Length: 181
Image 1 (spheres, rainbow, N blue to C red):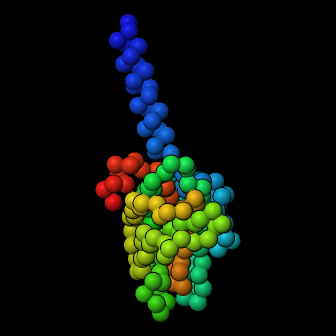
Image 2 (cartoon, rainbow, N blue to C red):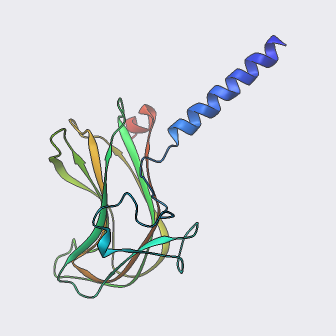
Image 3 (cartoon, helix red, strand yellow):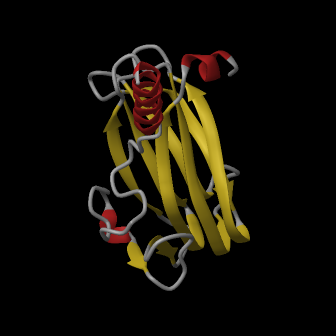
C-alpha cells in the first residue's frame, strides 16, 4: 500500500510540474476570444475561414507598404525565469515588403525593464514575404539582464498583403534548456 501511495504521489507531482512548465504565458494566443488581450486590435480581425487549430485565427490585411500594422501584448515574466520559448503558427498571402530588408510579415519579441524601456534590439522570430502555408516558427531565448516583461509583436511591418497567426505561445524553459542556448 505504501508503494502504491508513493507511486501515485510521484506521478501526480510529475504531472503537475509538467502542466506548470507548459503553461502558455500569452493570453488568448489562440484567438478563440476574438482579439481580447491584444492591443492595437483595430488593425486586425479574427477569421473562422483559415485557421491552424480551433475556431479562429488572427488576420492582418494591409493594402500598402506605407504603414506598420500589427497587434501586441505585454506579458510579465514569472520570477526566477532564465529563458522562454516563443512559438506561433503563421501563414502569408501575397506579402510584399517595403524598401528595407527588415520589412514584411513580422513575428518578434522585445524585452522590457521595470520602467517598460526596451532592452537591446529585440528578437526577430520570423519575417516572411510572398505566399507561405501554415508553418510553426519557434525560438528559445535566454532572458537579457534586467528583463521583467516582454512585448510580443505580430505585424505587417511596412508590407502589403495578408498575414494570419494562430496558436501563439510563450512558455518558461528549464535551466538545462537555457544552458544549451
